[in-house]
Length: 602
Image (cartoon, rainbow, N blue to C red; front, side):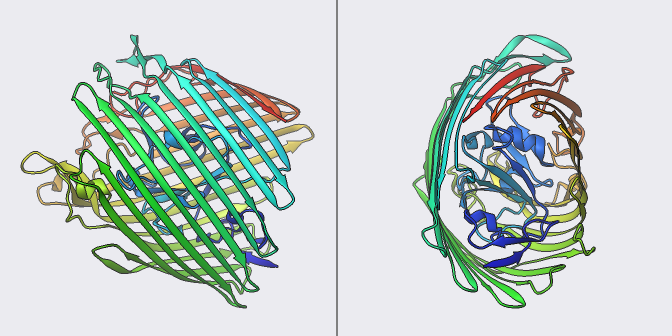
């Protein structure tokens, strides 16, 4: 049985209902929204934050090597991004934000970034956007061993075994990395003789297996456990010697059953996170443990004209740490009801409403509208128009922190509209997306009248901008040349502020660059290849008055790659021209550095 659904913003595809993995059908997303996808397996990348940084328009905010790393999508805050691993929300219920360094994986197949507040059909989607991480396997058999090292002294090893037999598959992998993260850095334009030394270690075990038990029913089960220990980078000129241990265990079970004209999907899973943070200078020794249980059910029914959608999601989470008086718990549910026009192959229209329920309030109207129109008969040129509302509840820390927590916080409320135009052919793709979003009741931690830091609904923020994409590819016999460019121009300014802060209206948010651009050139001839990557990041203000800022910077990197059958060796150089830059104020960044990676695939 075949159905027509819109899998990408630029393509209409015929999708087999009995496709091997549940995620292949693309039903869980409102697919007319712009997305950015990257194949981690093809590019042999275990480092998620590096892949995101080089292949998407989002701004990656990194607190140095081994430091906390997060992303800002279209000018939203880090806690406005939700991360889903095989259908399970792995964003911390305690902090509201997740460090991307803890998500490195030996068997992740791809990641997908979905900007905007309306792009995710089920679950507690972020008002800034969502990151979708999936594991799947389509090869009959593969064994992959990767070794890598760099000039910081890092040594990393990952092993992956995957097998598909008839309708069954399994995939298991391990990742072990150790690094002293020792490097000299720039200070006031001069290479400092002092070195940054922030040792870190990470261990990951992950597996996934599944089976299509009949022509209508399939399932998959995935599990991941990881731990990471690291010394956090100290500001230049200060030695804090603080360190952090992170542990995460997550499990996901996906079931799908195909009826004659309907599809039923069920996702169940759980998350356990533990964080130990020690700061000897401030005499802080804190431990926090968060547990979360999640269940999501979806039902999709097809008629001649429409596809009707229904989703019910519930998440129960609890947390205990030294900053709470006792273990805190919360239950959060969301119902989604939608309708999509599928009669015409050139036009798709979706309407959706979500009902958000928590312990103390019900928000019955969270609508979303999306549309996609193919201008030409060959469907190479398309236009999309989307409008949505979304809300985000405060995190556990926002509500319950013993000194400064604010149980009376309002939810953050986002309203967004976007439109885009895209042309896609076999060797050429170009497109742009325009967007405008206002987030009311933005939650920000700030000192109150007593000088105690507390979260408050301080302001409304307007984010508007454009995202541009250009992909070129040319093949001549053994020669293959490709160029990919992604750029964003984002103005994120204070739209409304509390009384007394009127001078902040119209000011750009701190650490949000106005311009962010990334380009990748790849040249392959036979078994040999060359890659060149370039990144420009505009200046970033680090004061709310916009009086002080970090300079813009240009980063260049190159790799030489050689393939032997399925195996590969890659030698890379980063920051070729020794750029003196800081992503976060006074957090040291390395000068020119090198790495080598060997991948053996059988």
